Length: 251
Image (cartoon, rainbow, N blue to C red):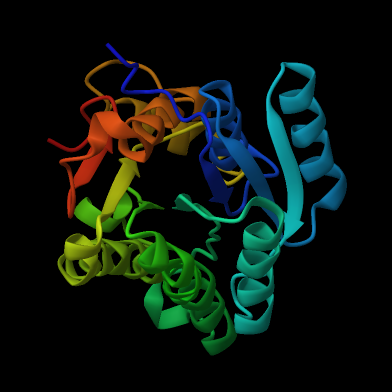
């Protein structure tokens, strides 16, 4: 029986893969045999370090610059992957950012930045990835959303709106492309140790920890296997779904 988690021969693009969840996802996909484009916007050295780690562990990867807020950059990245590999099988929309503030105090430029990176960026990347995927009549698009987009959090209204938007995008796009053999799903992490969460105070961390039934915060390595599942044959009959990986924080 073939391994339903084997990704040999597959080509994947992971945006925002120079650190955190994106880097863990890139490692996990490569460990299952996929060739992985480690997408980065400005952290070139970190992206190349991730590639070096993957290659050192016997995997295959390349660092690809992609600014998800710029359509030409997104299109060029997808074209580069197709030129190198002949196809694009998996897109993981992981790139994102937050600029937290109460909405009444949120500046226009911060509002636009969050929506442009988190929501519009995913839309741009999916649109570009669909070009080769529709021709192949096969593909996997996976969004990395957030528990905040499902249950909300004071001070993160713009971030929550952007992540909730990914859920609507996932369900609608899944309906659009299912007949062409393309699945679209989302993974919704809970509180995960990343650079984005490192800025929280100890009191804030304790308050979050109290809401997690499993009693610990997550790590990027807790999230990556969910993406691997959705990326391969194991998740072939799953589409339009949100897979929650949050330690029970949101049930």
